[in-house]
Image 1 (tube, rainbow, N blue to C red):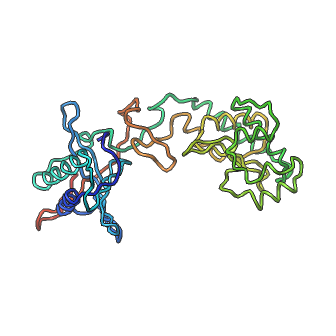
Image 2: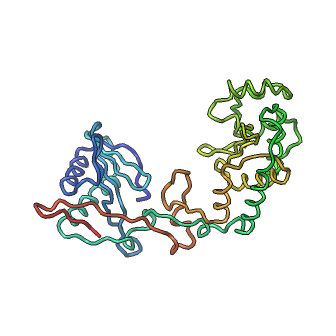
Amino acid sequence: MYLIEEGEYKSNELYEKLQEIEKLVYPSRENDYVRVYSYLFCPVKVKKEIKYVPIVLIYLKCFDEYEIRILDKKIVIKKGESDELDKKVKSLVYRLYEFVKLQHDNPVLIDIELIDKHYATGWVKRKYVVKPEITKEEAREVWNAYKDNLKNTLPSEEITLRDYLEVTKIIYEALGLDTSADLKSLYLKYADGRDCGMMDLPLDDAKAFKEWLHTESNCGGHSFEITRGGLHTYGIHLYPPDERKRYIVSAGDYYVSYYKAVKELIKRKIPFIASDLKFTLKYLTGEVKLRVNELDNLFLWVSYYDVIRKDKIEWDEFREVEYRRGNSCRHLHA
């Protein structure tokens, strides 16, 4: 399964095999655009045992093509003939078809213990994957100190560029970065880089900063990404004060760095709102649940291989597709 390449393949032979599968099962759901067959299974041999890999088959009506989904891997089968057809893809389709026929005629009950856990999905607390970075006691102390710091406010929500970059520098210092350069140079060195013209402003003109903030600063929040993220991740964001007269700091995807920044801002009694602190403390104490073998909406996940306490995984409930068996009642697997 790991060696099967994602991609699009033209094959009348495989297209017709997938049509045959559709004749044997009911859709899990259907609308004007797709028919979806969730929890088809393909048998594989793992260490002399038969295990099952869950597969989703999708028919896209407007394109007249099929998608085979194995976790986040997508294989598209279209009508036509490719010059080269991956033998592993052909083997997968035929094995899937043969097992669907078997389940239709002589069903085998599949439970979670029979599924190859590298392809099953579920949830596990982070503390069962890596050692927590902080204790619950430390988390409580920081949370209480943060709530106490919320008593502090700025004299006004209007600030200068210098004010903003001074707080930015404090965060760089908390992260152990070299802060020997001038304020604008530090920003240009460590921030996202898409500043929407902020670096063209004078350092000490509050009116100019306010005008820029309300007219030119909107470039997707990039100007406030003061630590650069990766290709698919976001660094720490520092937003200027709003009517609450406090800066707003968000974590992006870098919770350890964010935690260091928050502690330093508290220490310096900087008025700020830590929008992601509660989640960050849960993350660093290991209490947050991570998606196993599948990205969640925060792009947090872990592979089954990396889970240390595999007995602590809470596997998703599943229901195999229903099979068309003549005029008999539709059969549900438990």
